[in-house]
Image (tube, rainbow, N blue to C red; front, side, top):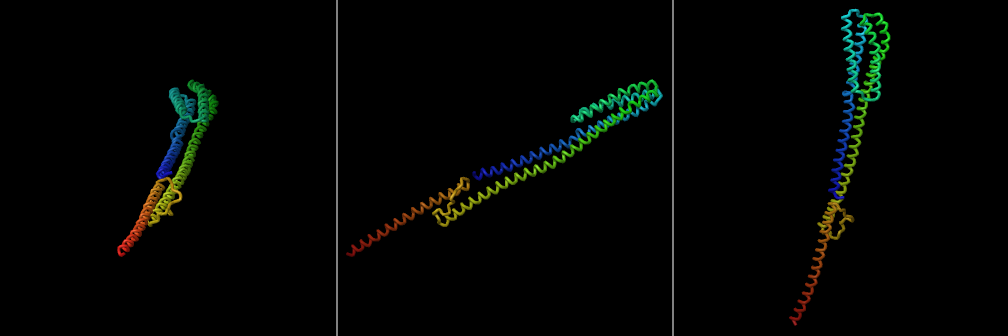
Length: 289
């Protein structure tokens, strides 16, 4: 693999690691937000709505007592209207809560509250009718029969509120666990990415330094006149540094051929010069003769 491809691989690995770490961080952050925001969007409104229904129910119970014990027709009529208002408040709160139901258990508790409330209202109406007829003693005696219903409904509201409190605690615990898991996940992925990128960078650096060292040794040999290939690497890679060494090796070979040609020409010239000297001496001897 060429150096440029290795560098591109290193860059791609770093970019991929950043994308993965960023994606994991954003995903985990979204999970934490969803879990914590669940309390704002569901748990808190559910508790407020149930508390509203419970407060209206407690107000209704008090008004029923006043309705039964009061003998003033005008006051009874006014209290009757306030009981109706409280009943509407309870029914409105229950209708609002139905939109906030989160699971099957929540649905079961809600249905139980509606059943108990309907039963309570059905048993309460005859008592209110006796009170409207100013038959207070009969109304009081019959009122004892709905006390148990009222306590069951109040207990149902309280249990339902406790259920939502546990949902809020669970959501907070899950958010804390998600944050911890997110930290470890991001740290693990980042550590793996750093190790891979670091290892690849070290490998590229080592390979490049080794090739450049071979190229320097070959260049030094050529500069010092060593054209016999003693400094030529036994194995030349195909990357950019290897191509540089190949070019230098070709230059060495060409220089060696050129120098060999010059040496051969010099030997021929020396031989011709010796022959010319011999001929000159023969001519000189002949001239003297």
